[in-house]
Length: 307
Ligand SMILES: [Zn+2]
Image (cartoon, rainbow, N blue to C red):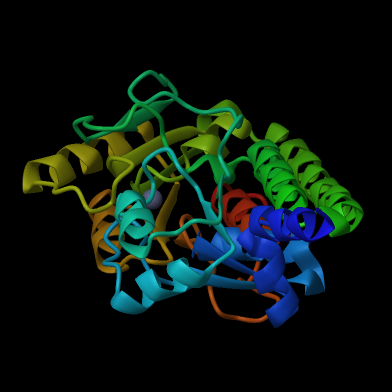
């Protein structure tokens, strides 16, 4: 009888525990670099975190490789943004036969419905998904993402639940502090200067958090097509609104926004990090660092000197 009980418990044991015993660390795969950083902050040395889309690359137009499928097949936890951000997510899960824990980081975040935000003006024609997927561009949502990751890790590895919770609390506090300091600085800027423009509709959550009027050339999917007429209209609106903060995004070619700025009679304000981290240590290699960079860059473009 005892033998049967042991056998049964072995059969019921989730694959995670046996695999984890062999490798020591939980294998986590994230879809893009911002989630990879969040997962590292929560998991510390208990997890090994890889990302599918590397820093600097565009998630929207990413093509899955056979190696990605292989990595998903052997991952214990897969963390994705959701909201249609990763158009290739279903294919990844199905082709790899992934059977671990799937964490959708944007669950319970504050989502912005597409086409219903009157603070935004964009040239794109809406299609497909109902919500803007770039929800991490608001630090309150960032805190929800972290809560979801903590929950996923704790369910998959209950032995270390306390540690994940503690790491989550420390990390979420840093996000709250950065958000409060950013909000205090943006409040000092008059409304008529609080305007910004980017290539694709990736900073809508950021703009709403700090009451910035936001203009974009493309919709939330940067792989959509645009016409010369769209660009001309965009330039006309930038001129009319007198937008001073015009940014290229780190994963995109600079040339289009440089042309937009110059034809609007403005200068390009630099680069912003929307959908990816960079690779420069302590500069653009973490979620908090890119968010801080974006806050400072936008403030500077609106005429506030930032130390
Ligand atoms: Zn995007």
